[in-house]
Length: 157
Image 1 (spheres, rainbow, N blue to C red):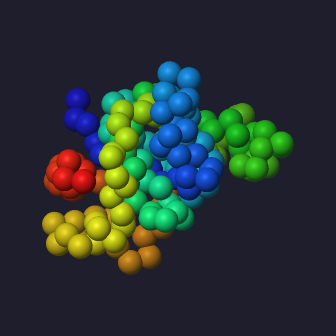
Image 2: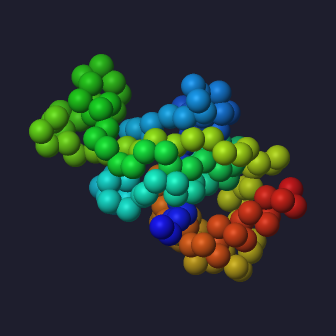
């Protein structure tokens, strides 16, 4: 089975790579995604053992903090059903879930965050979804050659 590569964004003030590393079994559900294209990736495309760059957004610096991998494929996001959760969506129901999530497990924290600015400096990454103008999706595909190149950057830091 082919492994796919992804980038998941999270604000470190909400949930960081350190939070994932200290979670029970270093695993958590990736909830709260409320964009249809990102939801479709979670529901339809992300598979067991797919690899994930954990990206810290809205931070100083914003960038790739480490790696996780998928341990459970897409299933209905139960936070959408919880009226006390800030991710609640009254349109989502048990019989007709709108939002999905996956489970991810911590694999590695990089010695240093690979900043967005650093990524922009490499022409090898010019086609990366993250670097495209207007790209704001919290779940994004990463090409295998981009993944491999970023791993080389991480080893140099």
